[in-house]
Amino acid sequence: MSLRLKLAIAMVALAAAATVAVGSVSYFLTQNELRHQVDASLTQAARQYLNSPINAPTNSPTNAPGNVQPGRPPLGLGDGPVPGRPLDGDDPPLDFRNFTQILVQVIDAEGAIVRSPRSGALPVDNQDRAVAAGGSGHPMLHHDTSVDDEPYRMLTVEIDGGAVQFARSLRETEQVLDAILDRTLFLVVGMSMLALLVGVIIAQQVTRRLVRLTAVATTVADSGDLDVDVPVDGTDETGRLGQAFNRMLSSLARSKRAQQQLVQDAGHELRTPLTSLRTNVSVMQRYDELSPTSRRRLLVDLESETRELTTLVNELIELATDQRDLELPSRIRIGSVVEEVADRARRRSGREISVVTDDSVVEVRPQALERAVSNLVENALKFSDQPIEVHAEHARVEVLDRGPGIPADDLGRVFDRFYRSDSARSLPGSGLGLAIVRDMAELHGGSVFATAREGGGAVIGFVLPVVSSVTGG
Image (cartoon, rainbow, N blue to C red; front, side, top):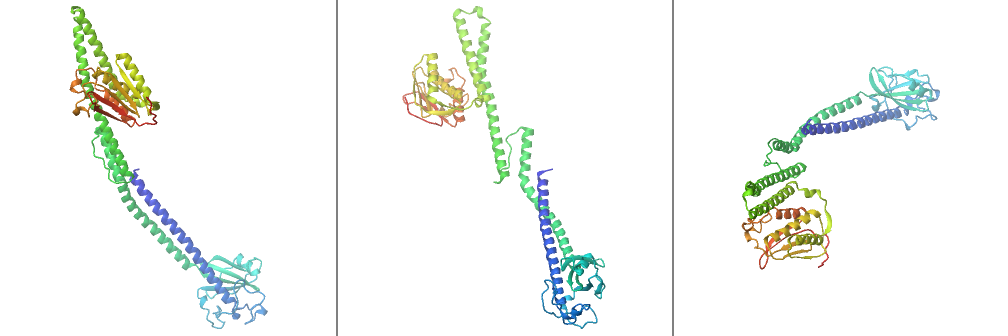
């Protein structure tokens, strides 16, 4: 089931449930109110009838016309005679206007009918007999009954020697309730259809961009083309999803282009040492013909080329796999790493390297930091035969040399992968060392810089976010 259909069904179900709930509440409230009004009309009719002297029961000598039994007033019916119309044709023609819809019947204590309406006798059940006999404990009783298959509401009131039954038809009430039920069903159907229409429109609006995003994702999955148009209109959740999807595709496209560029650059850079290595291997086939000096030079070249090739492959693997992400960051004093790298470079090269540090603490991956500092120092040793200075203060590491310097046009490119200036093409190196420095700095929220040094040479380094810093020496 599609999301669009689910939304439409949910709208229909919600509208139908709300309409049914409102209709049900209206139905039962109206039913209770109408029944209350019917009961009130029966009670009012009983009050008027029983308080009228001409309608006192004739089978009691104390209830002669005009005498109301003082000891047994109808409970809750009030006092005082009210003009009315008797139901027996032999009685005087008085005007009982409130009785036009109410039937009255008198029964004795045994339940036998003493006086009945002209339209026919009303039913007398056990409840009515109990009230007439005075043994029910309730001098007034409301209950439902049926007269000729027509629903009636009946009030039985206890009097001396029996009871009086007042009945009113519920046909009008049932008609009103049926009309409410019909209107409720009509509203349920109408509101459901309207909700379906609104739900379809809303579902189309909500899912329209999702459908487009799905189509884009399918296109990317089938073709592998990351340069596709992504719908990013709107500021709601769907719009933000489109924006995130667009950023994801852009990131993947950049990563793919960088990968392709890395492969192309790596292939280009590998050709040079491989060609030189192949040439020297060809020369080795005539090893016996070479002089001792040529043999030694050949072996030195082979060792240098294999070392350079090994370094290049290792750096390519590091850049391609980005294994530094497997190392967890930790807080370390940056000066201690710089001092260790400088000491190791001194022993290997026999060169003078001075270090100035403080107690700045940074949160980095230790091996990545050590590799970046080592690349900076090795780069300075390669381009200069003068003493090297390394400063590490306030989480800023810079290496100063007295080499040929960097042309102004090349300052912005020295950290690019495989970039080598014209003056450096004859020197060993892969062109990846400074690129690794930049990746390390950016990975930890820092930046790199390269400037010309006053008096000749270059200043190359990076800056990292400092955790704490105490000036030292």
